Length: 465
Image (cartoon, rainbow, N blue to C red; front, side, top):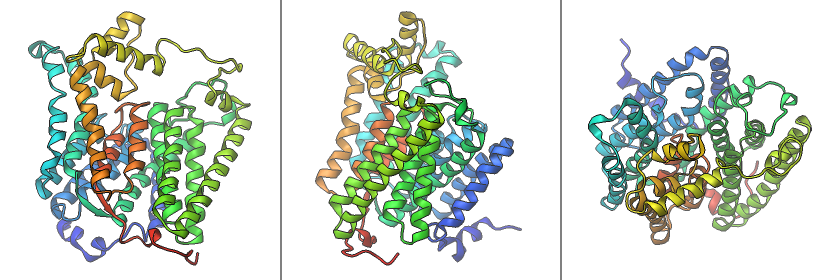
């Protein structure tokens, strides 16, 4: 009989490094993307395997080496792919999984008492439910809507309690990012195979045809995350010439298919996060790192210009019009009542009119439906907190910003904090908490990351590659 416990404890499994077997994992996930495209029904099986294997692995290892971060990372990277392929019973499976893994991590590894403010953050989400709804008469539809709005923030709070002030090495952090990136590669392959010829695009609006048949906003956010993960590998982990080329090609691939979604937020977030990474590398490394950052900047700009030019040619100039806020005829687009900027203004107005506990979770949608005739979900998590939770939401925003800054200025051990903050902040301002990724990246800010095991940051001369 197969002994799972012996399997996960086997020396081959314990010592198996995904960094040393990088190309093998890339190949496996390229094949996985192809399989799920041709047999999307297998997405359900993949979803079950991701969750069950991760859960059993954490339980058997008792989280002795922060296994929950690695398992959660793979879940985060898989989320949108599984949504595309109907790969699990729950639409919000990644958020539920993140909560479950974080609770297991707290159970096995404990938590810092100073993370108690995140418990306060979670508790402050409750009054706007209790005061604005009759809990005994709540319909299933209302309940589902409340869960949709609050599950992401709750997941962020619980996983932050686990990660706050925990120590990991740079090697572990890189392993976590790789586990995010591998399933995103499968997602990218799926999107690429699903997409028709770019020449068929006739509108500047985001489109599902180049988003795997799914929501362009969430797909672009995921592909932008892929841009960052593989650019991170390109800058910090390209130890051989072949790895250098492969990582640059992967960054280019995600930039290309991401731009074709015509959804701007996720791609701009990925690009800006890459720029911040270069800045971080430049100011925190010696001669070799500074040269690598300068060269990386040149590659980033050159690849971006080349891909933009290619897509601009393929779409007869439509991608340029999209990113300069023009319609397909080249006319400057006017702000509409349901544009994200106008939505944010409307939510700030709701906060001013209801400063104590806000209008209640999800009620912003109802108010917009009455006022404008359309029920539109908020795209900005910060203005949603203000509108729907009032002054309690403002306190939560202060907690979210104060806690990582406290770690940064007091300990300065997580040199990557500004990178993860960039991705989190930009994502919640264009996509809210629709997917679990911003919650997880926020939690990564709270780790103490030691770079002592990474010679990159103290190397004076270039390695032989």
